[in-house]
Length: 106
Image 1 (tube, one colour):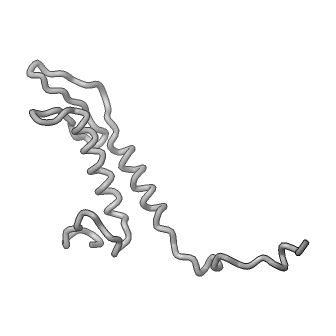
Image 2 (tube, one colour):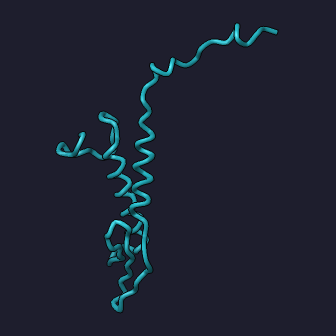
């Protein structure tokens, strides 16, 4: 049986040749968005039927004539994740949503 050290081939580049991973900043941005945009307090129901709850960021989330409170919460969290990830995304990464020319690092 051959010795593993004699037959083993190097399949990865030395550490100094590897690209810098970009996923860590993006993971951290996603976690920050999650923690900065959690609902706080209790749901309040007004006499007119509107339902509201606060967000940790200070915004009041509410239902409306064409959307539920749950839909507003989901949209708010998705927008927060998008903004946080966009802020740290590497330049040149292909985008689904076009970044405005005046955006930082566009």
